[in-house]
Length: 515
Image (cartoon, rainbow, N blue to C red; front, side, top):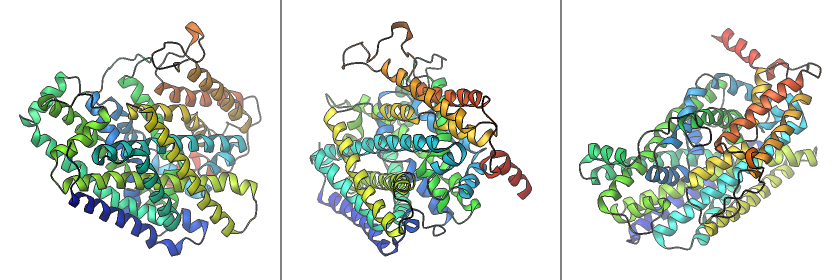
């Protein structure tokens, strides 16, 4: 493979310079926890929309989707396609709910509705998901840059982690959001450039690309059966519906964007913009993987090349000098921006849900200091997880991310839907639902996780009673268990006395009156 040219390194350093500049640009304004985490009212809707886009799109999109399109069809794209289907009818109520009933942490709503257990269960699930996702992003960026430059992956992990921690410490949420805007433009431009060059490089153009991809099973969303033991379209549709609610209805990184907006309408406009832009970008990067498959079918693929390395290999061998630098810079920027948002949101949850509960009524300066310590700690832990991924040499990263998300989702959507839609559900019933959900998740993971790479044994073998459905269904079942068990158990306890602002019916009525 060719090495990066001096011009490419100059472009990469310039982009990193802009990234650090934006971090330091807002350093004098991070004097309170409110400014560090929200900076409410300082962002236009379009900037928040691009921030939501960049929060949801990272190196997982940049490298994971092309790797998936290279090795399989477009089935994992279905999860993203379900987002607008579900949210275009619900975002009008979710946004006002959070802007009226919480201060900073999403999981404050869970406590107000169902008590302490619901809050800590949901916030701890969020932290586990974030660490799994952040470790994956760092792994992908380390592998990609190693393929492009030959630099040791562990050095890359340390440098990237240090940059994103510094940006967060100096610039807070203001730096994060304006970096997201910058990264959104770069990511879109890099995707268009790569897809255009790929299609131009394929002999026979788009018609031949479609023919070869179809013949190789790289198009479509199948299998189209309802077999729950396999990754099918049905499994992805159901999983995607719950994913949409979980990400836009219960995820701190997204809800925090709602809170930074000036008004409800501004937050809703930003959400709709983020939803609208996310789908075509996910699709574009999946198509890049499909086009890569066709290209290497025609040109011949280097022996032993892994799917995650196909896109970096194409960039280094087929793209002109300068363009390579721009694409690599966009890749690094995507990682830094998405991880910066994750670090900020994790620190917000850490301070609001844990530190303030332990250290009550302390000066805001102490909470701000604790927030920054948490940023550093979260960055270090994420880098360690990324290093473990590098050591293990994980393949099929996109599938791994989806599986971990399903496991750590832990019925959170079930808690949210019961709280938002049902005035009859109560604390005791939902607590029972959470406990049953935990037991079920433990059973499913233990009876379906293999021991060793080549062994068919599982951690806990119950024979015919093992969990045999696809692991993406685990997240679906956990939500349904909380909904069903939580509601039925609630019937055995008194009906709660609730603040109407916590319920969907109040926001629906208000929405009708405003129209």
